Length: 263
Image (cartoon, one colour):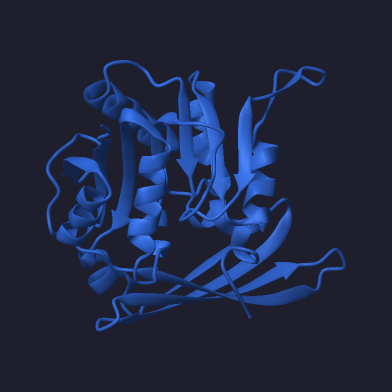
């Protein structure tokens, strides 16, 4: 049994196949246009995972940095950075990937914007983690730079995750994969534990079993807002979708925007 993304990395994109990263990147660019005076030249994708958003933004002309704490996820992200224009015309997008903790990462300088997608903030489960992360983000943002992130909502933790179980059966790189996902949500600690069992097909047709545990923490809106304000951010808004409609309690995901105020 392991914790993190070591086991699940190779099926991560299959588990999130419903995510439309092009539409999400459209929203990110709309937020840049709404909250920044000009297009940011350098953008950090924090907890970038397999690099889906990093790559999408890089193809739109942004200089990208991707930070993640999983070596396995970054390995997939690095492969994704290669774009083929024919058999002999392979081009690698200019993305810098760094293996670092999202609470205490270090960059070579500041960036114009930071994005953190797919409920990565919820993986900050220990007391103080949220402010550690926000403080580090603030440190590496340009004055008036924008921080965009999303979280799974209390509604999702209580009503969608709960103690439910899910199954994925598919193929990855031509090999069969079976993944069982069991949730366990503790309302008192506000921690949801995800126990994953992965069966992946070996070259000889046998299946290898691996297990992994992940945990997410439920945050309410006021907690997120207070943490941002205490770390030097201006609260710009919380939205329930890509249309910038105000967030509601019934939303499954909140999209939050904040501006780094620096004197």
